[in-house]
Length: 109
Image (cartoon, rainbow, N blue to C red; front, side):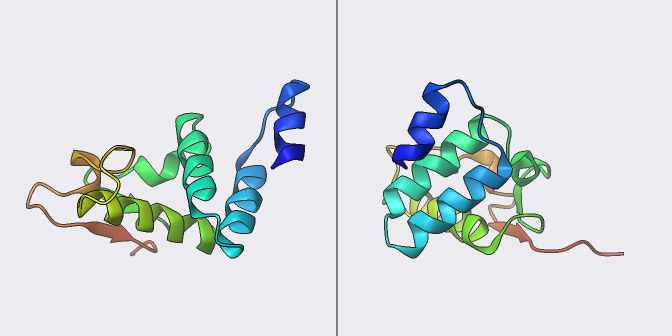
């Protein structure tokens, strides 16, 4: 994470590969708050825009397993009120009109 901060300090922009690797590393070593913060930052920069592509659902099929796991974990924590202060994945886009929590893990034909 120090190298990541240093690279940004020198003007290099992280991409989806950078964020995926960092989120995976943080999740693997149990640094979930850092992984969550990186996920939120990446989403705000549009790196994981496919997650938001279907209204009322999570579209996870193009995400790495660690990134998808962190997105779902964060949304579920917010949904049950454990992380309501962060508010990144809660709200109407994570819930269908019927109140269902919808996860898309692949594409149908």
